[in-house]
Length: 395
Length: 75
Image 1 (cartoon, rainbow over the protein chains, first blue to last red):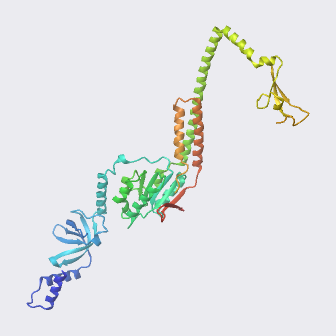
Image 2 (cartoon, rainbow over the protein chains, first blue to last red):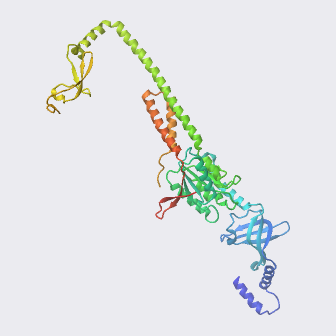
Image 3 (cartoon, each protein chain N blue to C red):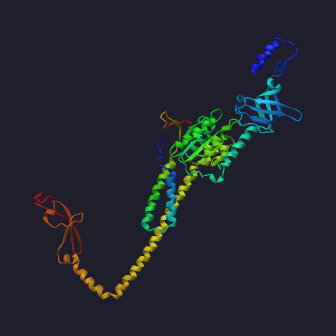
């Protein structure tokens, strides 16, 4: 192209036959067109869309009666989430020009907005959703139950955002025993997708986390966009602990909501869902305490009954013995009686024992002033040792 | 970063299991008493935990050496 222009310039400066060269006429057309328009907004339908490897987009914009070629350079289109589908109605902000090599009237597109509000975003969301669905990440069977009494919750969000403030205030009210570990992340704009993914990776490394909340407060569809990222959704789906996604307000549903184990409409609700109510739990432990007590008493009742039955059997066995073996018992009883130490005591002996019950057999077992007990035939007598030579028998 | 100390869940889950055993199983008296005593201890710990009122909010940081650290977040 540059070579052609150089050639043209030479020709232009040296007209020989009064005829315009093709280059000259297209260049003049380009000048006229470019000076005749500033940026314009054009509405039309996208057709013949093609994205080149260079990243530039080419398509035709048309309505019922006309069409115009359009180019959207990479620099302009990379802020868009996805290319427009064939047939999409769009608004473009563009600068009309002439592409000299082809003598083609063309629009250089600076901005492209689907006429359907949020159309491109929706399109991209649908594509990402379909990809996640194909991989089974939206399967309801994947949903894990939340822990009943979480100890430690990782919260991936902005440390300055409304979402965190809401979660903290609910936690204070409902379940202050929990430990909230905030993994700071950008939640909107450039770097938010990467930040959230890095946050999720970091959260995985925190020990003993039993629940993860990812979210942010309300904002525009663009503000919430990072939570529709396929990359963030996949990272969330890979979390090893149950997850809650809480993005924006009631009506905002994001892709992370679909892959999380639980979707909460707002961050406050996420905290309410995650945390038990202390008052209710106090009531529950009181009920458990009552059941514990009655559980035990059922066993003691049972034990008493069992004991009673056993006693009955024993008594029965004893009375049999008594009835049938009276003579034997009597003989045995006499023998036992004869062997009993009490019989010896009856003859006038006594047994001396110290306070611990040890039998005192010789003088060395006694110390002066020591208390001991004497067992005689019909009972015990308290006694104390007396000696004229204290220490003589000590030890 | 520390592991979590005492867990309310551990105490309550064990307590529930104890209550279920006491209510349902055919235990001898010694075993029942032993479970009851453990239940009382668990209940006491659970109630102590329930009495805690200071919420901990910390910000997780990755240190230069790659380890994780925390700092208090005042909210």
